Amino acid sequence: FSYKPSTGFHLGVYGSIPLSNKLSLNPELQYIKKQLSDDYFRLNYLELPVLFNYQVSNHFEFELGPSIGKEIYAKPYLPWWRSIAFKSYKEALDLGLIGGVKFKASDKISIVARYNYSFLPFVDYNFNNGPGTQIEQYELYNSSVQLSVMYKIK
Image (cartoon, rainbow, N blue to C red; front, side, top):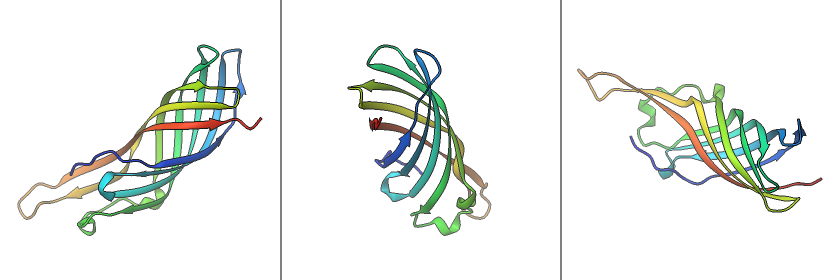
């Protein structure tokens, strides 16, 4: 089973708590739609990243921190999915690490590029090709690249 990356979207709010002249803590709340190409899986999450931002210059910041997410919708779109023992989607949590860079275009607008790596699988299943064959176990993990435009209200 192979898959190719696909495009989704995210929407959220954030805050910024200054810790020093160059360091701040930025909690966020995001709604994120993730899916594998060819519609193998469609997943929607509420995620709470808590990122440390380090200001390198007036226009650039580095971001790094943990993220925890709760899967709020999941649906497999596999022709053979009934033959696979999926774990419960309703209990699924996502725990990851985010790293990225932020470009401050103005006082109000920033452009952000991030990578999010998940430590927990969003699905695990066992697969058997038939009698006399070994049962294989597969785990699938979320990892994503996020491109965002942020608008500061205050």
